[in-house]
Amino acid sequence: MNTIQSLAIFCGSSEGNNPMYAQGARELGKAMAKADLRLIYGGGNRGLMGIVAESLYERGGKVIGVLPEALNRSDVRLHKVEDELIVVPTMHDRKAKMYEMSDGFVALPGGIGTLEEIFEVYTWLQLGYHHKPVAFLNIGGFYDKLLDFLSYNVSQGFLKQDHFKALVVETDSTKLIERIKLWEPKISDKLSH
Image 1 (cartoon, one colour):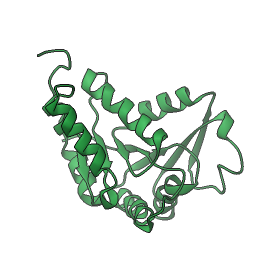
Image 2 (image 1 turned 180 degrees about the vertical axis):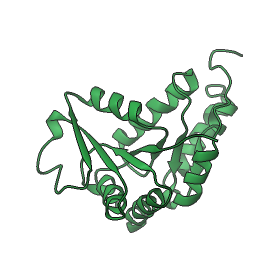
Image 3 (image 1 turned 90 degrees about the vertical axis):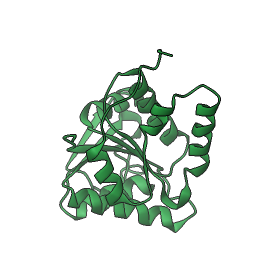
């Protein structure tokens, strides 16, 4: 069993069009508080990012935001929901700091930034650069088409089956956290046949 104390959350800086996404973000914050998990997130308290942070913070959970200097503005940081805010020079520094501080990674619904962040850590997992769980909280089937595409990648020989199966995918926050805690880093070498 992993010693999971903190999760990096990647998700939209907007709430999206479906109220289910905001509800799922609130539920994740609540489940993280119950599991005594620290949140490492992008530091802006807008959209789903802010909802997860507020939900956890309101329940006494620890929230650490990591913001690049360019986003350390009042329209991004609407109000305080962090125990600690770390301001770094660039987006690259932001991601490096978040990755370093986190024991696992979870994507909620979001746009291209969310996808870029979760796929970078997923790539690093398959290359053996880290051995931390990578997960999707698939609220309302948001990631169904993406998961179908990854399955298609497997069938076409571009993604190994065990690398695909290494992803933790759940629709329920409590189950997601349980699976992350039980996750074992047993995947084959990306370069072996």
